[in-house]
Image (tube, rainbow over all chains, first blue to last red; front, top):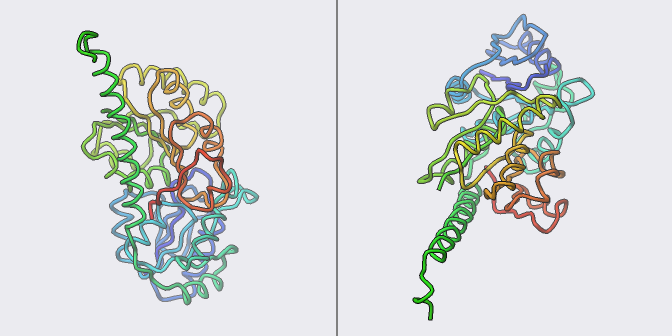
Amino acid sequence: MILVTVGTHQQPFDRLVKAADDFASTTDETVIIQTGAATYEPKYAEHFRWASSQAMESLTQESRAVVTQASAGAVLLAIQYGKPIVVTPRLSRYGENFNDHQRQLAKALAECGQAVLLENPTAAGLQAALDCAWPRIPSTSSRDQLVIELRSQFERWESQARRKKTGRGVPKSSIS
Amino acid sequence: MKIAIVCTHGGHLTETLQLLDAFAGYEYFFVTHHSSRDQDVQKIARTYFSTNINANPFRFMLAFPWALSLLLRESPDVIFSMGAEIALPFFFWGKTLRIKTVYLESWCRVSNLSMTGKLSYPFVDAFYVQWPQMLQVCGSRAKYAGAVL
């Protein structure tokens, strides 16, 4: 099963939804599209607008590959489950986003081999991208490092606050 | 110590939830917008829902008194946010009320800062990016310490 997801953003991403639906008409494989705010209604693929995190997680786990907008949510989930990823950035000139920042992530993911970049989604383009998208082994070490850094920062502030309180409470006579 | 975790829904929320271990052992609450994922955050911690600002200047202005009221009620020690614009009223009042502020730029920002990042950078207490190449784009206050992936 191929899972196609456009996220919860309030602008439609009809380009990807239509391409995925066109692709669904050419294959026997099940294609499920999370359409979000799309105005295009798929005719061939199974589809729904929104789903809970658990449902999306479950579908990601079941899928053979994930086709997604270039946003953290679906990409992280697909990477966590080691699924091949095709990523299509939303573009502002099509009214899909307020700016083009998704291109940065899409290109970075493609450069480090985490995803295949498909800038102009079509049925044929999707087929070609899915053919060369390979699963990656997820690593949590970078996330762990960030968590450690944040906790260290919180602990530093907590100590500073404690020292301030202690300093205010110490009687002058006890200071040598 | 109490931490306010402020973020819009969607990718910002997803990334924030990836970092929940950073808040383990602290008291924390969420501030976010209504979305299909309301229950995802509500089952973790107490959650306040603001209007979805969505680049609307009027709603953005209204968020300021709302944020102040919430911060006075909850009195957090730290405000953590990955954006988007909902972070700004909280950071503004946070500085005024001497609450420590932390901004983490989204993992999606690989080569330039978001508007929220640009506006937050000058005055938050800690500013992090998630790609090392972003350090060349930001000033010396930015730190890279890892990423959600």
